[in-house]
Each structure stands twice: as structure tokens, then as C-alpha cells.
Image (tube, rainbow, N blue to C red; front, side):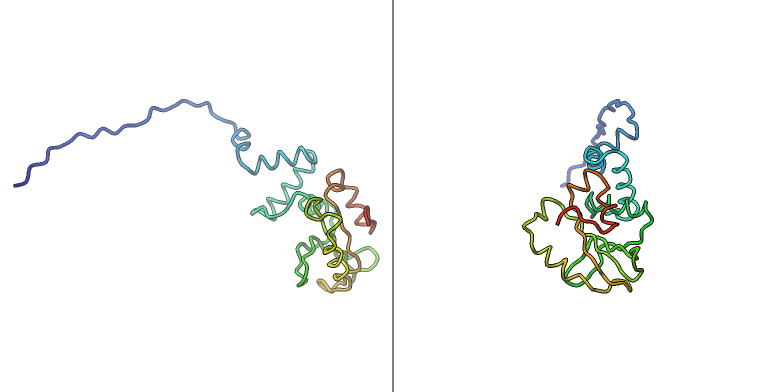
Length: 173
């Protein structure tokens, strides 16, 4: 024979509310990884350049798959109104930037490879071979006439290296 169930009283236990002061929006933002990254950028290149790089990242690359030096370069190209393409697939290589319509001839373009100092050390001859192989290839109706390498340490110091690249000058051989 079954026993009759007796009603049990179950008390819901709620945790006591802990009073916490309201946080400002900037205090909440500091805790996210993106803002920690932004703070590192500010320390590396200053507030103005970090802000322009972040604007490019938010506007174009919300998934965040670009490096700071690539974002700085793209922000500079946008500010100058220069026509460019990013990450153009050439089959054997994918240059960071193809700067279109150079001053000398509108049917010419120049490749800008942005090199990090750690991953692209001077002994990396594979980069040199790729640069030579890109010469003369067609991209969007223009022909690649030059490949300029821009190094992280030069770009982090100041943006004059980008003006040099725009003029076709090299800081390093």
C-alpha cells in the first residue's frame, strides 16, 4: 500500500542583494579585452594614432583580424584619400596593400608589405623572393611596378615612413 505524500514546504533561498556602486561606461569598458588592447595601442603609438586605428578596425574589420601596424597604415591611406586594395590574392602571395594609381602613371600600382619585426626578420629571404615575383603582375587593371617593405619599428616611431613609401622611397634595403 502506498503511503500518502505529505506536502513539503520548500523555501526559495535568494541570495541577499549586494549593493555595488554604479559604474560609469568607461569603467565597464576597461574590463573588456578590446579596451585592454586599445590601451596597449595608446602606450605604443599615442592617443591620436590609436584612435584612428581603432576606427578602421570597428568600421571595416569587426572580427579584429588585422594587426596594429596594418590598421595604422590603412587609417593613414584613408586620411590621405589614396586609393588602395587590401589583402589581394595573387595566388602565391597576399600583399598587405596594393596602392593604386601612382602619381607617375594611372596604370601602375605599388605593393606595400607591412612587416612585423618579429615574424619578418632580415634573414627571411622568402619575403624577398615573393617581392620579386610580384613585379609586373596585373591587379585591378594596373601593373605592379614596385614592392615597398615597411617595417614595424619604423612605423611605430612615426608615420613619415608612409610618406616615404608614397614617394617610392625606402628606409631599409
